[in-house]
Length: 115
Length: 111
Image 1 (cartoon, each protein chain N blue to C red):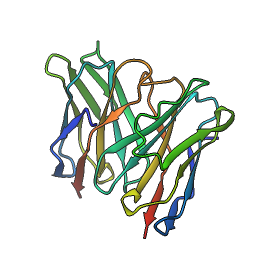
Image 2: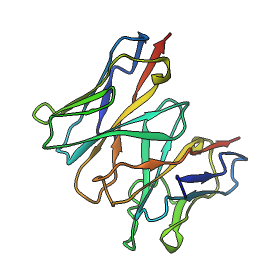
Image 3: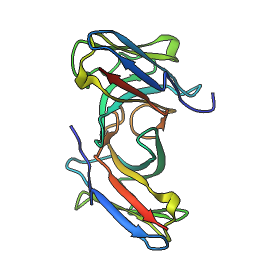
């Protein structure tokens, strides 16, 4: 596609429920990244997929968070048993080249609110 | 953890003035990138400067990098109301690690 697409754009969920956030990267981009941004804060790295290599999960805050990338394309970030502190904007990005040698293209994000 | 720190946290200027934002970082880098974010949603890549470069231009944007001081600056000349946004620096280290973002500078350009 022309850009990185994320869905849903907004999600309100009750504490304790599971949520799935979807990211559709730019076709042909080998690397895909998930970040989250709390209100007025910077971006916190969560997880990074690069080609067929094992993902870098070093930023996941707890074992309630997991992500997968199927067929080297679409990625799903799953948060189980959501907590209020999970409320944030979840941003997905992709890049043509893995790592930091290239600029990232970001989606518009999913604003998650846990009530 | 956040590598880059932008300064100031917030900046308010009149349309037509220049805006300068600074970024300091702690460890050695491969490159440094600047992004803009409108309304707390997706970021837009503005410019990438490599560690062996000292200055780079793109339209009204000028970026400098001083690796000896571990700092970078972003200059927006002749600012417009549409430049109102948050600006983030992001540092890239070894080839296969993700970018690390700072907390950003909120720029307000008053018409």
